[in-house]
Image 1 (cartoon, rainbow over the protein chains, first blue to last red):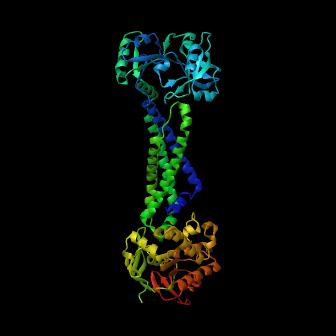
Image 2 (image 1 turned 120 degrees about the vertical axis):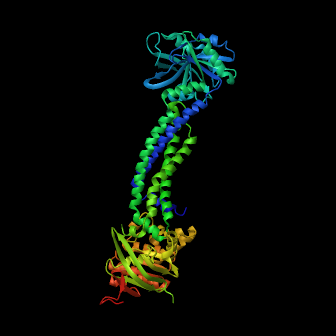
Image 3 (image 1 turned 45 degrees about the vertical axis):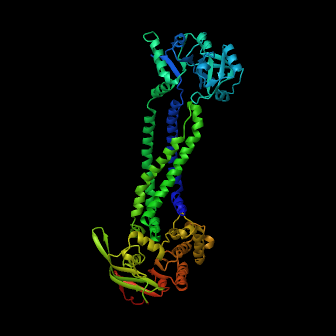
Length: 381
Length: 231
C-alpha cells in the first residue's frame, strides 16, 4: 500500500491522456458487458423454460397457422393435461414505433395450460365475458398509463379487421401476474375469439398450440405422439419442448455467441494496440524519473512491478467502471429486449479480461523500464 | 584511519558505437570519512563517471571500489540497489524530482524501501524538510517551487534515510550565485554538523571553495591543481 501514491501519481501523470485512455477501455468493457449480458441472458431464457410445456406449430413455418381443431385430437393423447391456442398479435400503439407484445389467447384454457401466469378470478371472468377484453402486464400498464376500463386502439402488424383497417380496439379488464422470467409483465393478452372472428384470413387457426403435460419426463413421448397424429395431413405439426422452441428461435437470429466473440475480439485487439502504445509512450517519457527511482535504490524488479501495477490498476479501474455501467443498464435493457441479462459470470470474465489487457499492454514497457541503465538514462542516452 | 571511499586501480571503458573509449585510467583515490571533497575538471575528464562509480550507479571495467570496507563493484544489480538505498544520498544538477509528487512524497521515496511504518516515515520526512527549511512547502509540487527550493527538496530526499555518503553532481549548476551559495552552505552544514561524507562534482571554483578538499581530474586521471587554483 505504501507504494500506491507513487503508482497512482504515475497513472495520472498526463491527466488528459489518462482520461481518454480510461474512456476507451471503459467503452470496450461496457460493450463487452452488454454483449455478454445479452448472450448469457439468452442462455438464461432457455434455462428457465418449463419442462412440462410443449409447443405445437406448423411443420412448414410458425407463420403458417395450425387449425385449432387439432386441439380436440391432441387432448386424446395420453399424458396431455391441457391444451390452448396462441395467436401472435403484435401491434403498435399511437406511433408506428411503439410496439405492443400482444397475444390472442383463449381465457377458458390458457391459464390452465400455462400456470406461470395468473389473473384474479373476477378479472378473468370479465375477460371471458368481454369479447374485446384484454389483460395487461403491470410493466406495460405503467409504461402507457393504462388502467382498467380504458379502451386501447391497437394497430395489428399482421391482421386486418373486417372493415379493412388494422385497428383493433381492446378494453382493459384486468392485470395478469407472472412468475415466469421469460414471460414478463410487458405483454397484453387479448381474446382469441375477438381476433379470430374479426380477421379476414386464416380463421380458425393459431400460431401455436400450447400443451401442458402431466409428466415432464414423458414430454418427448407426448410430442412424438402428437406429431404422429397429424403426419401426412395437410397441416403436419412439429412439437418441441418450450426449451427447444426457444433455442430454435435464437438460432434463427444466428450464432449469438460467435458474433459476440468476434466483435469483442476486434474491439480488444484495437484496444491492445492503442493502450499498449499509450503505456509505451508513458514509460518512454518517464525514462529519467524511472532512472532516479533506480538511483534511490529501487531494484530492476521493483521498477518492473511499479509499471505493471500502474497498468493493472488502470485497466482494472477502467474495466470495472465499464462493467459497472453495463450492469446498471441491464434493467433498462430488459424492458427493451424482453428478457433479463445476467451479470454473474460477466463481471468475473470482464475482470480477467482487464488483467490480461494490463499484462499484455504493461509487460513490454515494464520490461523496458526494468532494463533501463541508470547512467545512460540520466545522461539522456 | 581507514578511508570511507577507496578507489583502487580503476579503469572504466565505454563502447561508443564501434569505438571503445577509456574514460578513467588506472585511477586511485581515497576519501576519508567526514570529508567534503570537490572534484573539478574540464568536460569529458571523467568526473561524473568517477562519481557514478563511487555512488554505485555504475561498475568499473577493472579495479576495485570499496566503500566502508565493502567491495561494491562485486555486488549484483539487486544488492547494489539495496546498498545505494542504505548508504548513499544523491543530489543532481537538475534536481530530478518526481513532477507528479508533492515535496513530502518526493522526500519519502527512499524510505519506501525501508521497513519504517507510515508514521515513522512521516516523522523522518518532516525532520528532513525542516532541516532544509521547507517544512511549510511540503505539500507543494516541484513546479510550484523555485529552483533553489527544488534543490533543497532533493537534498532532503538525499539525507532522509540517513546515508553516510552524499554524492552531488553539479548541485549548483542550474542555480544563480546567491541560491547556489545557500545550497552549498547547506551541504557544508550537513558535512560539519552531521558528519556526512560528501563528494561533489563541480565546474565552479567558487562552489569548490565550500569543500574541504579539491581534486582535479583531466583525461581520466587525477592531476595536480592547475595554476591559480587552490587545492
